[in-house]
Length: 471
Image (cartoon, rainbow, N blue to C red; front, side, top):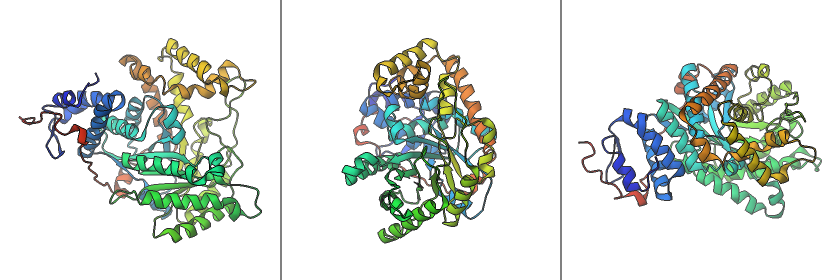
């Protein structure tokens, strides 16, 4: 069901949720909200008309505030690592590309049964485009998933790779940076209180000195830090990450990290008294999506764990929580325990979850073939000269998630339950291997929850008949 109007939606809330003339929300029947209303609200938030989705997203946020499902910053947790308050754990940052409501629910279920509190939901700037998920929708859906599963605790929502377009920067530097600023403004308002600033695209290897190579990277990173800090809600210190080398390119080095962070701190100091970075992303041998071989299998990747450990130690020396590894989800299972052993603070996981979903036998083969046909018709320019259909579809199939979002959300319940049982196990695997299982109490003892209420959208005022809703 999707409501056709805000009036109809608000009438449906009667007896479960009250909203007074000032926009204050009252929770009257939490069980009914979880059992039935949140399923409808989340569909309204994704597929409704503009007034309906705007109101639904606001109401989901406010219900989250009342039901203990609140967006938060992981900054305090990472700064505690910098002070050695905890060690030997690696936080999974999980890119949510498909059926985010069900995927989020699976992640929460896995977290509840393993008592995991240190995990991040994220989406990159590029993923927002091809999965059709703008910031306000993404955060609303993840809060709704927590409400549905009865998950209480901080929800860490992260903007991954808020990246400056290197090609555009060369011809229009301010325009390229302003695109990231505009996105950051939307993201912070939506509850993305964790953001990875990616200006590594601006690194140039031609100059002789490392400072010159990293200059545009650290100057623009500092500028974006100030911009985002100025947007922070009261009481929130957004967790910000920097990046010293583009993932998939040459491996990062400790001298490069030193050059970046020295320049960054000096540049940020000139802009004012601002908190700096809580982590630094580095390149140590992985690539986004892995490296596909002609038969569709993944090539063996040699992660330089010694360098990763050295970079993390140096990042903590400079006052952040440590080093971040991207492009890790397609690595062999036996390698994941190496990340907490080498004190990696965070790893980013995406393609492996997509594969678990798309390759599950309960996903209808007819739908899978429709998605592949769409790729053949609309993404043929991305096919390599020697790509077989298998390799081409494996490389590009993530780009079918947006166009087929309605079909994926409309799968029969029995298929959804079978598919996401497998996805849930995949999340639980990473929680255990990365040693964040059992971090619920640790996170609660470090991260300070910040209540943040929003005004009711103007278009919703007077649209309902809430008088006597508590009767």
